[in-house]
Image (cartoon, rainbow, N blue to C red; front, side, top):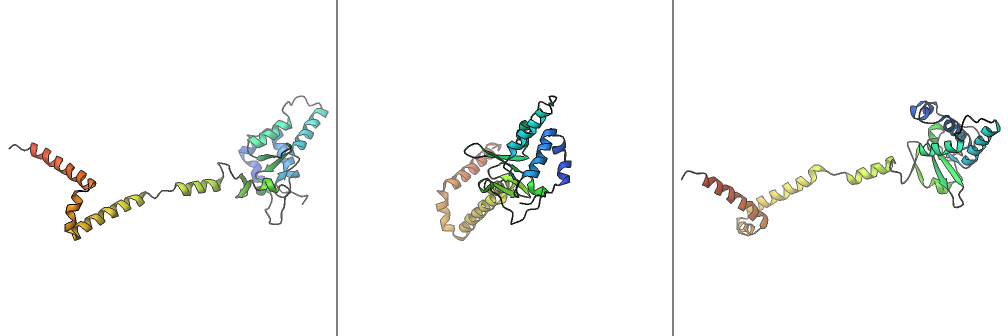
Length: 203
């Protein structure tokens, strides 16, 4: 695993990082970048946070009651990192924007294969496969919800034209159409309109 890491300076310049995170969460994020594996997983994230808290106590910095363990939860809540737990409660964290900082190469590996199977990489950002904000999932939903507005009308118009052409070509079938409920409904409406017009006549 390479011991040198890159950071994307533009990522840290956005207001979402500079204004919406506490300073401890920002510092913890940099420790995550330094300790992540080639795929962005941090297996010792809780240990890092607890060690930083211990450092605060050693220096008797009582002015800051906000702990790094709280900052760890903040990174997860703000969706800068994903948290995974195994059966015995060991926690692993995944830096969501890892490949915005470091180049994605095919030979890169990770020990957290089971967790890697739960996410997918979209535009160099990790997304949980069941996440609502997943762009791939949104595209699939849009495809299933796509409706062609003219498709139904064209079919209805075509079927009606076929009926009219059939009547013109086969006049002997006209009597059969008179027994059709749709035709009778249409015909009754015309008769009622004609009767109303007749009632309006002066004679």
